[in-house]
Length: 198
Image (cartoon, rainbow, N blue to C red; front, side):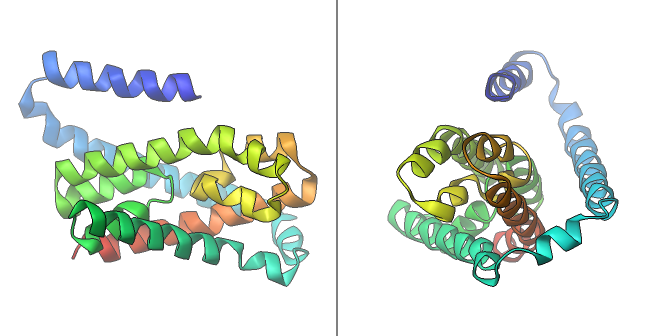
């Protein structure tokens, strides 16, 4: 997955720089937005079609249900501090951080709200978060960080990094990781839009 992600990004950069005419770019943005909406619709269908998902989530301990909230607050705090130190407007920094690792969503929304430069920064920041999370999550579990080891994955703990969590831990923790990713995936478009439009 990492190789595909990096290869697709590099291929897109080369294509955009040397081959693709500038007149095509507005259409690409519109098609990407429609593909994203289809993806979100598919995630909704997948979540709604699981008969046992609600029961399994209700079986999670109440304290564990707060994990995505603390994860979101920690991410936004870090993004706000980074924005301040780098001289970026704090709302924009929060909008970039609010992608929670969901690079396709955050970059598309911020392209519309704040322009292509901020969208590119959001894309890279959230891709890097995912790439760091893949080796970091197993290491944190080995160091006995408990459920906090899930948080580097952000929204990706419902898909890409869920496989990493399930490989190094038990079924209950994997379920919590999935729940963590679902909540952050719901919060992400709301928060990116809220902060990125300021």
